[in-house]
Image (tube, rainbow, N blue to C red):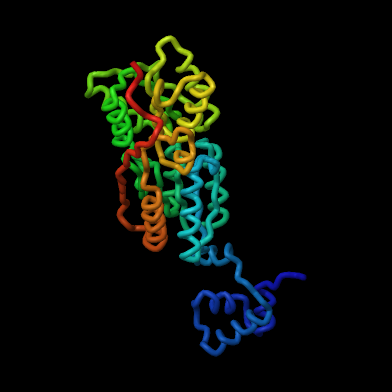
Length: 336
């Protein structure tokens, strides 16, 4: 069956297309009687105005975009689910895009979201090319960074104090007597990972301990690559007594590498992660990790995005949430 169009409504109601459009959008000099007649025709013909057409006429589409690195990462899948729940409660739909922290994918998805005339975009992925965000800002498309930030850009951001989170991890390991410590990090173009390592190294520096560059291994954000990198450290001549991992996926990979090498955690090797995803509670041993207040971050970011869609001149805010160390079973004092 052919879908009803605005042309069909106009013909049936005996008015112009412009009059139907004005009636739908509450514009122009359309009497209440005529508007009611048009709406009755729309109901009878089961006509639904196009979301894109509404956007072209300056109306909201009640659709937002969400860019995240990888929907299979529990931290970002939890963000996506929370965003969808909040959006649904406010009458919005969400288009979720996984970018792998690659700028070509970011650009591709942003073009797609612009074509869909979204009301705003939540960005939880690394963006190396600042021009991408500059172009969006120039188009007055509301943007809010979540768990990430673009330092040089006038956009809202809601993030965790990653520097402090890294320092908390270091202080915990130092307090347990560890001195030979290694790090598994994501690529440093991911600002959150960069700040976590920076905070970790700073806390060690203050304690008089240096972490050489060979003890910091850059990884893809996956269990598989965390396992690969940890295996290199475990097989090395100077095996560390502890490994700090910049997210829980890398930490789980490190747990797997230790198990395969016959290294007991935490008796012979302590492992600490970051994010406090659902996976951290189901590993054996359960994972010590640094928690981000994800639910609060998403709520604040979503509220900022909706407000920005209604007021593009709002002063840009940078909201920094505090991390929390969650001690479980994967860390202890080093073996003698």
